[in-house]
Length: 432
Ligand code: 5AD
Ligand code: SF4
Image 1 (cartoon, helix red, strand yellow):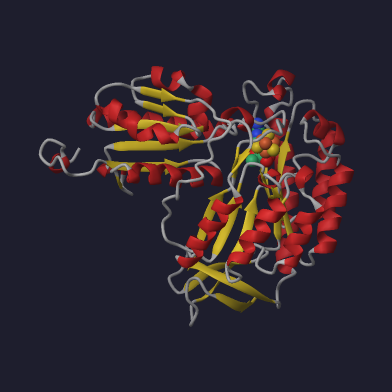
Image 2 (spheres, rainbow, N blue to C red; image 1 turned 180 degrees about the horizontal axis):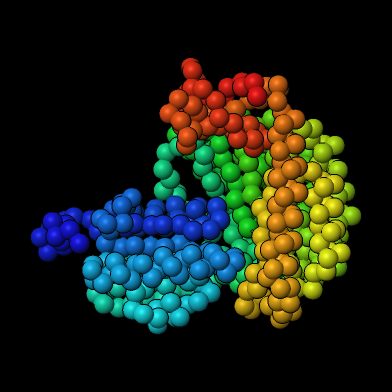
């Protein structure tokens, strides 16, 4: 610890909070809420863990490997804490919710365990922890949506706005309904207000977020209404959304995407499996025929739309034939991209009780086949753009070169191109 910032010497100096985020965009958005709450109650925010009095780790439980990464991080923090005993360590998010006291009991590292619906209590819990009282707050709420908290965002081009929290779908493989609780939506009015302020601050792209974003409901307003209102705030701001569930992909929503130029023509539509038997065991609530019909409807209504998906390989009882059906769907839809995972059994979920009967080598082999096929299709879909001109929103410098920008098309194609006269935040026409 830096003694020049010791409380006794300089009582006016703010305690500094450092936060690192694991997992999905919802966690990124939650971290911005946490930083806002901490900074409003007088804490400073630091980008450097070595300057911090409080280290928060916002965690993910969705698959076992996500948890393992966090556990490794906590064990390195253990050494750090040995040398810096005054520093508080707090575990936030889904692992806090899932593991609760286990995190505090194990190894004297963690001082605070705070679940996703209890962030308002953080300043108070941190103060108590500084006086030696370790704290745990993991109650899930039916109403907490942090509607009145303006997230602390770093300036940039893209802003993420969480519009609903929780999930009522209970897919049998998923911990989210247990770690994030029941669905609840923010008011349309406050989301639209937030978008206005972000547009005034110069943000050029807004992504509406929710675990199940298209089941958004505020009184009579559904997600189609919300995104229509949001897109009308400033037509020069692009609007995206994540993650929709196929079941709630209404005709009205498809028409709203089609009818508003600044709503991006890219839809992430998780399919999970191509086999009806597995979809039923997963409690996904649609058949593959329904899903393919939806894809056709979307493609007819929104010319040029790009689609991406999530796939799980090796769900309990998945046969070679089920797996082939998944490959068929990937082939038939021709996704532009996919997130592809090995099934990971999660305690307390329904599928946990089904056992984990697919051997790891089989899961790995199926996953690799899925990845290989998807890569071939992604390449083909990208190559089809060669020679065409795309409108690209310039986001930032390319990771690989100081002379080039990186940006994306509204169909979510990443492009890298010479800087020339373009500036960050502008939309430029780029020949691919
Ligand atoms: N095992 C593997 N993948 C999972 N996902 C969610 N839970 C699991 C699990 N237990 C994947 C799903 C979901 C994405 C966010 O993570 O594909 O859509
Ligand atoms: Fe999990 Fe299914 Fe809800 Fe998505 S829809 S968060 S996969 S339970």
